[in-house]
Length: 144
Length: 262
Ligand SMILES: Nc1ncnc2c1ncn2[C@@H]1O[C@H](COP(=O)(O)OP(=O)(O)OP(=O)(O)O)[C@@H](O)[C@H]1O
Ligand SMILES: [Mg+2]
Image (cartoon, rainbow over all chains, first blue to last red; front, side, top):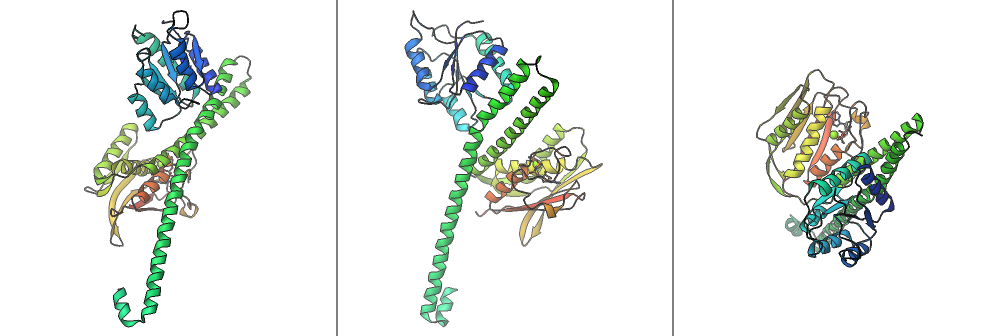
């Protein structure tokens, strides 16, 4: 498996822990970087990643939409608009099922949209599939 | 009408009557504007509540699940049962919230009216039900050629719920029968759906079309009681009415009218 990092952009501490736990349960061993608001996430991606002596770009971004400071939609927009990050798969992971949110995410280039199920067993299954697909089955671009 | 009055009555009285009518009309318009506004706010509220409640609910289920899985060996049997109760109740609340969300979506939708063949729409609904329940024997008679001028998406939801109810509440009948047709009532075409199922006591059904109102126990007939609330909202949005005639064990007939000039 691809040993790059996973970036989780999520502000709710309970959700962060549950997602971390679900990744562990799914035997996804890539290390997890958590950013709790949109501005931090953008700072991490554009100022810290890609530097030879610092952090490499993540293999996958799990992005919540409702975030403080800079919201998820804006993060998505900037990630997909920048040559350095546009090929990183972004999975929107949110509680919203509003049609506008779904459509806007795809329009901005989201690679997948998952509405976090309330049933935690199903959430773990979703995380498991997602990890398998994006980190193992899917062939990523080598140039980012 | 008013002109003929002016010929016979003193002018002043007529002016006051006209003033009064105009004033009433103004008040009426004002009130319906306020009502519309209040409804919109209610919908927006229901919508945001159902979104924002989802997140803590996820937490409750998530941590209950984590507790029962990660401490499987140290938890007593009874504790595990209690945990599963918590998760069950959480799912129920989740269902209720989803139902509210659905209701608020119905009300926010902009109507797109077109001529719809209700008869063939009903056929499709029945076909879907037969596919899902191949073991059920239900005789369905649909009057051909029924049409309405209405929103297709919403009518499909309304019909699916009415037919779905007839289908569900005839489940315990040896020979289930459902009839969909039309009749005339006060010079107006009225549609109906009749079944020979469980029926219920109308005297207790004051709020039948409100959200989460049920006349049967969930272990007898499953459901959360959102279907008829959606039906009523859809029919009201089309300027129509829906009502029911029923008796315990004698089946139920749901009537509805849709007015195309609103
Ligand atoms: N055809 C029918 N025959 C007998 N009772 C009915 C019929 N349709 C509705 N009811 C009664 O009205 C109640 C409300 O109906 P409604 O469709 O809103 O809820 P439900 O079918 O119980 O659940 P849901 O539609 O949310 O799955 C039902 O629970 C039932 O008691
Ligand atoms: Mg129903």
